[in-house]
Image (cartoon, rainbow, N blue to C red):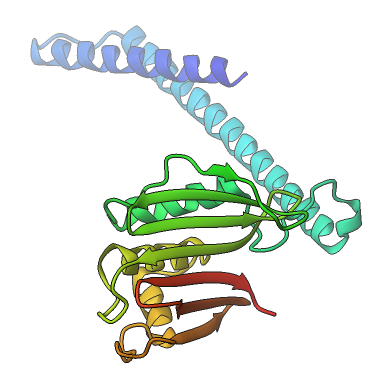
Length: 243
């Protein structure tokens, strides 16, 4: 039906314009306007109005229908949230994301803030001695390695970023950038400034570089962010669920 009204509007409007042009040319030549020109021009204008009105009405009804469906869908989702036992979906445990979601969020943060050299192409599964868990690993370079611990339901349980280098020097470079990226990955609403605030709270930036046993941590949105130094060459950044 909408196609019919659209066609009426287009044809009526085009014909109306043609008759108006003919009438103007006839007047400029000093000819008397035929009554049929006036009648046909008026008829075409009415047809165009009918087509336009019908098109707008059907379009409005269609839009309202989509809105009603969206509202119904949201209401259904809200009911499911209030009654989780009726939902067939199971929310991932741990950090509430799968390894694929983790990789996508990590690469998304890298792209958004142009953090060169940190994209993850593929997480490789490694054997784990812990019962019921698995481990995915990604090596950025000789000095930076990422390990993702997953639960039996394949959801991310823990994230560890291992850095190799002289720990008697201030933490910086790609290691610090990797820490910021992981903070952004686990907090969807965070900006890069928020990530820097977390790093500041941990104390990484103002730690005593001669302190061999540094262990700083902070809690944000139910997650624990921890930076620790194991020895003169190894340090670790970890993200876990708050205990």
